[in-house]
Each structure stands twice: as C-alpha cells, then as structure tokens.
Amino acid sequence: MHNRHVVEDLRSRGAVFVDEIEEIPPGSITIFSAHGVAKRVEEVARERALPVIDATCPLVAKVHIEGRRYAGQNREVVLVGHAGHAEVEGTIGQIPGKVHLVQTVADVARLEVADPGALAYITQTTLSVDDTRAIIAALRQRFPTIVGPDVRDICYATQNRQQAVRELAGEVDVILVVGSHNSSNSNRLREIGEELGRSSYLIDDASHLRPEWFEGVSKIGVTAGASAPETLVQGVLEGLRTFGDIDISTWAGVAENVRFRFPPQVSDE
Image (cartoon, rainbow, N blue to C red):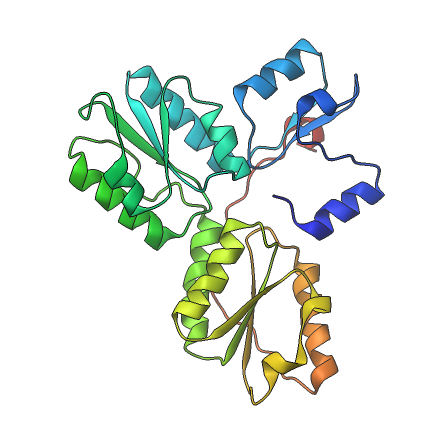
C-alpha cells in the first residue's frame, strides 16, 4: 500500500520492498511500514536478529494497543476495516484471540459471536468517517454493551481531507485526487466527490491527466491522499498548465499541527 513515487524514489536509493519477512537477506536493515505489521513478523525479525526500524504510525500503534487491551479483557474484537488492507492484516496479527472483520453494515447483521456481552470494536485508521459511524451505530444497536473508541482513531489527516473535499465540491466543476489507487483514503476522497455530483478522478501524477476531463470546465479542485508527497500535487498543477492558462488559489482548510517523533534509530533528538 505504498505511493508509487515514494517506492520508486526509495528503490533508486537501494531499498528493496518485500511482502514477507523471510525474503529479507540476513543482517539487512528492516523497516516496518506505517501500516504496521503482525506480531509474528516482529518475532521472526527478533529471531533472525535483524536490525529493525519500526515506522508504524502512532495512530495505528494506538489501535494495536486498544485491541490487545480488549482481548486481555476476554472480549472478542470486531475490526472495522477493508479486507486485504496492509493495516488490517497487521492489526489482526497484533491481537491475540478472536478478531471479526466487518466492512459494511450488512456484515454486522451477519456477525456470529460467542458472547454478545463480551465484545469490543476498533477501526482501521484510514476509513471514511461517515462509513465508520454507520457501522459503529449498527454494532451498538445489535450489541448494546459493546465497547470501543467511537471515531477517535480515524486518522486526522484523513478526516481533514474528507471535509475539504465536501467543501471543495460546492465550488468546483471537477475534482482531482492525487494518490495511489490502492489507498483507502484516496479512493474515498474520489468517492465523496462523485457522491456530491462532481466528476472526480484519482490519479498517480500529472501523466494521467486527460484533456477531455476539462472540456467546458472553469474550476478544478485538486486535493491529495494523506500520504501523497506535495511534489506530486505541484506536478499536477504544472500539468494542468499544458491545457491552458490557470489561476491558482489555495483552500485554507484545517491547519495540521500534529507532529510525531521519528523512530529513535533515525531521530536527531
């Protein structure tokens, strides 16, 4: 679940991307992605004495801690998330005991649990806030004693961008979302634009711009997924200039002042 351009840049610096820890050569510096990894991966890395840099997002790590705490209370855990997503796979692998994955309100209706009175839920951090609320409401309706963190674990960057697209849709004719096609939050931004009646396109970079998208269009909104580099956004703006003169104005949006510490192995502090 990586941005293609970030991957290409790291590969040019000699980085190798693997899906399984067994593929890592002995002694190689090993970086766990921001999506987090399962406990088994951590254990194998220790057994092989691999030098590890854990780059798991603190928001994801918080969900892991919550899930383990609920499991320690002998609760079955319901994870609201997308099947196959790297964060979901890592989270399930971090929690001892039974974990149920639900993706929709309909999944909640089909859920079978051992004890309806001993349940908890957690959420994938990059989901749609609206969709998450609906699923949580369904869980609470069916299992009144279920416990969980509401939507506080949804990534703040994801929330801010979703709100920005809603506001942007009222001002523009077309919305461009810069991000990877396997990014949950980028796909949701495009979906929100479409739901609000605006033609919306998810693109990796300026090379994917199509002139037919802008025929008869006077205002174009450009946004990006939570992990898309700013250089890609600037590249898209430059790409739009090839179709004609443009005036650029910046949407104020929400100031993001949250700062996370770097892993100690790469921190200057």
